[in-house]
Image (cartoon, rainbow, N blue to C red):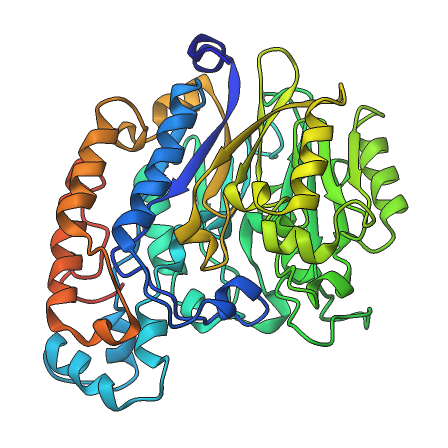
Length: 456
């Protein structure tokens, strides 16, 4: 895809990737995420993680896609600790956490906001009643280390999408189990053209009121009630929305979000045979609301097991539109290293179907913490005019890429263990780095330490 095709289109899909934060480490907090818990306590390399993510962003920008950068969050979350009764200087509070239960400081220091598929659910202006782009920040209430993200996420999004004539950034839904919301990781939009009304597909793991079957081993994080609330908030037409329940059996197999078992773009749904309950009904409703133009690529369990799908993150890939009407599939290296998955992908690429190209990237630092290519990006469909209203400092280009790489090289450690989080110098390093980053990205004061040292 040439740059001209994307940049001059009347509407297009932009990817906003999360920049990995300086406290990236393997805390193993995400029960239900096999990679996260399986790699707990290993040494992480924050510098390598950030550079790997930046390399993917730059590669997509070079292919002509609009690529934005979302900033990391300030960690450790000192304002949360103060709200929990800790007193003293920041350094005194951090030192006192050496006597707390294992994982306590680690959760307060998680860099999990890097996975911006969980930042929000996004509906483009072509779908919404007031013709603005709507964002609902995810509450992520199921996991403590993620539930502390939403206020900063809202500040960051409002600094980037600041014009209320074009953008509406809604606060997170109530922090209650009934409204558990994991953002775009359980949301897909299908369309013929990014600038025309599409069909928004919401996938939930359980229904709080209704008594449907649920997983028994791992939690179902997304509720139907949360999906319905987002539909109302964004002013979406019910004739252009579809709700489906994720298969409880695959949640128990480690598929904690729908984007670990399915991905879609434009008129293509690429998913596993076991992704949804009542798959035939789901496909039929999507196809009907897409006026019969949906192409479903269903991967049979005999070709790729759920275990191999989870291991390789085959479906946590990015489907990217091409100028020839086909699509690229961007996958992590783990797909190439999983024989059944790689054999399937080779056959898929040569099948003559809608996916005719593979891009393979090394994202090992993110993958070992349970997040693949699709986890790292938030998809935002924009018109050309809306794109002009986005904070221009966050668009990836030939100037920003070396700036950010240099910033990472100067500010990030190349090794981090959970025990290193007690180092009082780490907080100083983080704040110094983020202060510089807000100037590079032209975001203004968005962090707690910049806002008088406390959260809003």
